[in-house]
Amino acid sequence: MNATAISVTIVSSLLSGLISVFITTYYYRRYDRKKMKFDILRRLAGSRYCLVPDSNESSKKEFFEALNEVFIVFHDDEKVLNTLEIFHKELNIAGIFSDSANNNLVKLFRAIIRNLGIEYKTLTDEFFLKPFSLKR
Image (cartoon, rainbow, N blue to C red):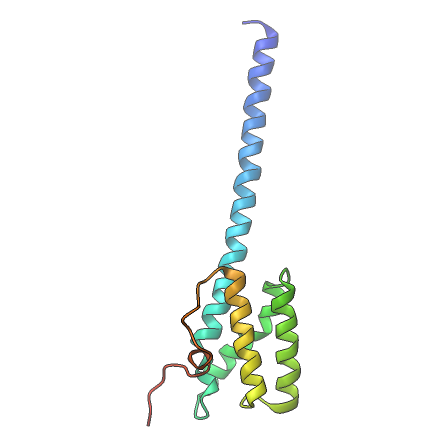
């Protein structure tokens, strides 16, 4: 083999390795972002028990921690951020149990679900606001 053939082989090997590293990194970062978004939604949905008047403090803590992370994790979606901002204002004015806060919470859930590409056509607003809980 001559020097040119060896150089071409080495360069093409290095180039294919670099391309595969970039592609792997891109897809891993995309996967990681989506995983974080699903985690926020999972925590919000799982701790929405705090919307029930006799809820415990741990559900409130989990719910509001996840809610406080939404603007960081969904920084790339204006609809989610606008909905979050409206919900934040409403919470400060009327409180968590007001009708307008509930409506804005449903809009926030729907914006997050839309961002993640989840089908939710059959879920009603009431489903988002009435979590599974034991009745006393």
